Amino acid sequence: MNRTSKKTFGFLLTTLLAIAVIISGCSSNNDKGASLPPASSGSPSASASPSASNAADGEETVDVLRYPLTLTFASLDPHLVPTGGVANIDRHIYEQLVAFNTKYEPKPVLATEIQVSEDGKTYTFPLRKGVKFHNGKELKAEDVVASLNRWKEKTARVQTSFGDSLFEEVDEYTVAITLAQPSNDVPLQLASYLQFSAITTKEAIESAGPDGLTEIIGTGPYKYVEYKQDQYVHLTRFDDYVSPEGPQDGVIGKKEALVKDVYFDLIPDGSTAFNAFLAGDYDFASVTVDNLPQVQSLSDVTLNKVFAGELNIVFNKKAPFPSNVKFREAIAAALDAEQVLAGYTSDPELYRLNSSLVTPDNAEWHSEAGAEKYNQKNPELAKQLLQESGYNGEELVFLTTRDSAGAFYNATVLVVDQLQKIGIKAKIDTYDFTTMIARRGDPAAWDIYVGSFSNQASPSQVLFLGKSYGWPEDEQLQQLIRNTTEALTPEAKKQASDALHAYHWNYLGAVKIGDTGTYYANRNNVVGYQFFEGPILWNTKVLKK
Image (cartoon, rainbow, N blue to C red; front, side, top):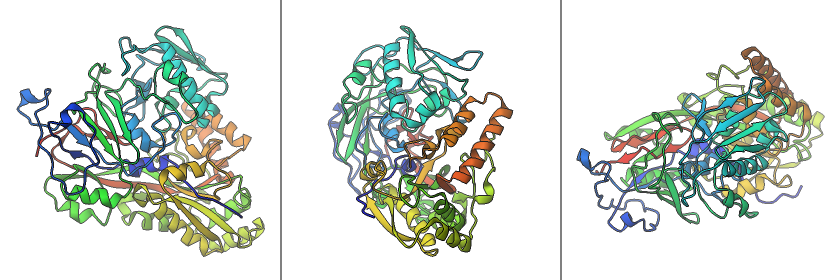
């Protein structure tokens, strides 16, 4: 079986990778928005000048904030890159019609409200007036329609949910979509963090090439300045930004660019970023269990824990052996989920067993249907199923990356170790993150992918259930997903979710390993910073040390 390089999926990274780092530093040159190279570990912080918005408080704050991400990518196009990692940057440039608050409830951002017809088929979104794009153009319905129809075209899971329906212009400041069937799913898909529904200008959509948007124009509190390949992305304050009203809650509510310039430094190696944090260059860091004692000894640091991800084994259903359900059943039978999770996190506080497609606290959609096939720890049954599948020691390609602080690679190694014990012959193909994503889209390039995924608000948003993610081209599965989106009462949602979960554990397009958490730390001179599905740098200021 000939295979070539590999690249991994983006969203997985989102949860563990977004926990990068902030560096505060500024000089008189930087105040003019000049391009800066990535900060080097151990370099002294430059002098800071008082921010105009804080001068009255007598606070001396920095005008330049640097935030390293353990990330590489090929494009900032939010409609093309299925990863929360890139959304960490894009969410500061672009906005959505609706977005999630911290309870994962979709609320208006560029829209003023969400109107739903009595039959549950038509969603109407009046737009806020006076909102400006970064090029000075006022946001109109034509821009929203062009953006969202392109987003739908590029997003397989949205196509499954919305069918052939398109967004349409009702009037200059109103947009609507009418579906063939009732749906609860439209606001959830629009608010998603992954491959998110960013709004740009109609002209930017029309000029987009095969490699993505050629203009990076949003309505967010920061506008794009420069992307230095594999080094940094530079954003600067958008002085004409028009903020939504209300208190900040997740991605909704008031947004204010308190820091003039933001640099997202791209540092794929997590240890490099952490060492720079210890050296005092960064104000925020992802913290491994091994690094916990070092952080706990710092008096000026606050330690936090986020439970926002999960591990899954995804099968390429177009590959010879993973396309065989007996083979997939063998992997599910062999898996000792707790052993993998314990090795992955090295901390019982950072994992939990969970067979469901959503978290246990998501009462609306959580289901234990099919859970008897989760965490079986039955190698003898696995060997029998392998034999029935026709597998006879052929080499299988596991796709992964060492980027994102090793999150994907470490999980892959732990899974491979278990599968080798039942007779699986494995080849681990390791690439940089961008290449892995590209390889993941090639059905001839891999057999199995072990990924870190962010939690989703509903089953319809789960990436590997979509037709293009591992190619689960099973019509019954797709119909069951549609059933979850068409359920309008709590009872109907429960029934639809149970049916989908039961079928998912029979079909086994992916095998759930479990939920994961991570520690992160921020220095106490960071004020107003929030982390929700990634960093939120608006409403954030960094006091001069």
